[in-house]
Length: 146
Image (spheres, rainbow, N blue to C red):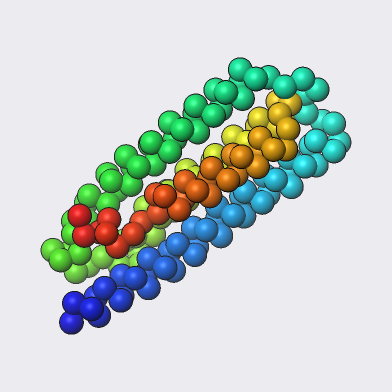
């Protein structure tokens, strides 16, 4: 009987992860295309603002820490799987979307860096960090059990 609930949670979390990955990948891909077009057209600044790029990197790291904090806060109201049988797709969708949106914002920081004169490689770094960030902070079954 416990295995049935575990399978249900696994399938719910798998569906939520797919939706969130579409969001993170879609925004990341859109940022890469927009950044490439900005670089090709020469619309961005001609000189790179290194200080602002570094501030964006620090902001990226702060946002990753905030994602971990928010994930704990959002999931704490549901309790553990054993004590709460009402955890469903609808109850886990908002925390998943918040995590995906915050990870996607990191890709947008990379696009801002390109507009301010950074190279495409910097944008790709931000997109990679957003994808890695989602994989690190996505909701897992062990998060529901703790």
